[in-house]
Every structure is written in structure tokens, then in C-alpha cells.
Length: 285
Image (tube, rainbow, N blue to C red; front, side, top):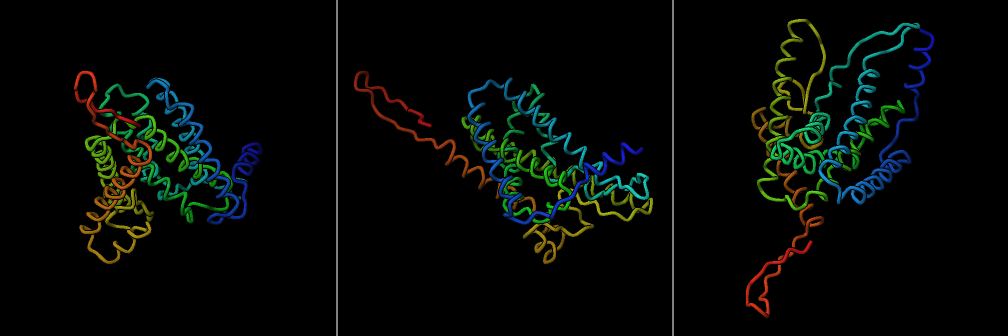
């Protein structure tokens, strides 16, 4: 018990809560950019099998950090005794938690279409979520060192893998590819909605007073996401839900368009061969 107490004290070590664009945040940004460049350069010509191994390795790292997070948010040490009081708001099925479920599909599925749709989701919706948190971390920072590292690793991996997938699979860019990713988003959101409704009523039956708001689309709890919190306050729930879905799809489409311009950058040149007079189209990346 003494060993566990010392271990708990170690893994819950504290620091001054980081501020936006303070030293901790800037170090994380620099590390994320460096890792993104190294992964893109190191794996851009790799086979799908090598990419799958990379994805599986990233997934394992995220799972380990997520288990740590759940244990920290669930256990507390009171008078030398461990007490379990799970924080249901931290249940790992938020928008930013989706890589925990999408990455293993990419790594292990043999269905190429499903894999492509999940890749499209990671390079658009998930990438946007990671960028949003890195640009405005705010509430994700707390005084526990390990949790701050966990959240930066998790959201940083969304950026790293999103950019890498865009670089690696730039030839897959198409409208069908994007809307496949959008379909993944809709499915994940639908699962979140079912969980929100089911858990809310289950909590009511058992008298549990906890916030459970996966993807921040529960009809029972306020959405606290920037911009969408105003929509929640101003519009009835059906209008809020429609704004949520179409808003995220629109933002993901913008991300997709920017990636297409910056990374794929197709230039098609049609000209006539001087010898045979045949017209060809060259694709210059």
C-alpha cells in the first residue's frame, strides 16, 4: 500500500497550470511540428504495411495514456486509502477521443474502402479537432503534469497523423473520399447521441447526478464548445444539432480544401506530343 501511495503521488505530481502560449504550450507546439515533419519524411514512401505498423504503435501509445488519464480521474487518495469516484464527463468517447477507435480500424482492417474512409476522417475532422485544441488549449490544461502531457500527446497525435495521412495518401483526394470521412463522423456522432440518451436515463433510474455529454451534443446538458455554446443558448435543440453536424462538416471540408491546395497541389498540363500528335495529361505534384 505504501508503494502504491508513493506511485500515486508520483503520477499526480503538479505544476503551475500552463497558460495559452506559455513555455509548456510552446514546447508542445514545437515538438508536435518536429514530429510531424519527421513522420512525413520518414514514412511518406513506406508501404501500407509499414504505415499500419506506425498507426498501431501510435494507437498503443494513446491507449496507455488514456488508461492513465481514466485512472487519475477515477481514483483519489484520502487518508491513506484509495477511493474510486469515476468522473463520467471524462468518459473516452468525445470528439477528440475518436482516434482511439478509428486508428485500430486503419491499422487492422482489410477492407480498403473502410480504411480510406477512416483515413479521410483522420485528415479532416480529427485534424481540425487537434489543431483547435493546440491553438486554444485553455480548459485542457490543469495542474497535474501527467494529464497535461497526456492531452498534448493525444491532440498532437491528431495533427501528426492527420497531416501524415494527407501527405501519404494525397492521390486519393476526391469528393467520395471526403464524404466517406464525413460518414464516419456521422456514425461516431450517432453513437455518441445514443450513449447520451441511454446513459442519461440510466443515471436517472439509479439516482446518479453526473454530466455525461459525449461529443457535446446531448439534449440534456449545455454544449460548452466555443461558438456552439452560443448556438445552444439561442436555438432550439433540433436547430442546434443541425448546426453542429453541418458546421463540422463544413469546417472539415475547408480543411480538406486547404490540404488539397497545400499538399496535393495538382497541376494538369495538356499538350500535344510533337511526334505522334497524341494529347496527354500530365499530373505534376
